[in-house]
Image (cartoon, rainbow, N blue to C red):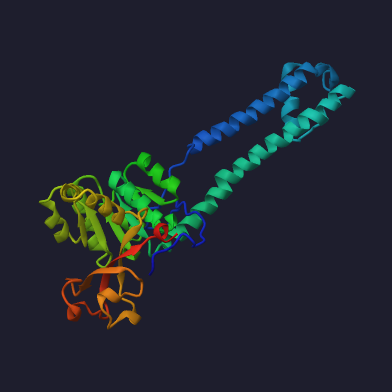
Length: 358
């Protein structure tokens, strides 16, 4: 399945659903559920109290058919039956001013309170039930998505770069134990799940076996390697990239099942060493790695129309650097016989970005 692009039209998938056997994806909300409910309830009570005060100050325009006197308790009672449109008729407005107040002031407040209660019922019962069912269905159908396990500095930068390269954020699932860190991913439009990425049920909840790739950056090498082991156990064919910071752990990460092992410390050292030999080397490497630069490093499979051609004659117009064939890397300098493209070859090339073409 190809990489999903920004042009794909899809609704924002805030996966909060739940269904049997699968832990639901969740999103952090700006206001807690009980906080939202409290605000609505406080607003309704405030509006009712305003009506109580209006009726109290205008109580001379009311008549009580029971005892002829309108007490404060009678005002509260009349307000409640008025706002709820019950209207038993035992207390009624008789003066023109009281009827005018009912028509101009109380009636709009009555509608406001009504809509607050209707809106609350919709928000907390109908809408949430619908969203719960809809997101559960979306979660069941997750496929071809990118799963980011760990949303620290490296993970957040990776997500931002993936989106910048054209991937729809709806096709990215981020797992992290901290809801606070996931708020940033939520704002980007990604699906998020608060949980332990080393647990089977957490990974099964995001259908890791159907993912296009998994990116692991847990912050600690031992945790990242454990996550790689779990992902490889559940998804033998999913490509896994992992960040490790100790050189001794690179081999362990590969033995755990990682396809790509990235050591930011080693990479930083390479950039520093390159800059010592030339003022522009490190600048070019950063340009090459980022989609915001003028050139971009791309890995793709050889097209059928390119088979039999040399690595230097790519249809994309890019500069071919390597061919990966049967787990072996073949450089562009190894001669025409070795660099002739065959079926199943993976090509690594440098291509211009849209910024350089415009």
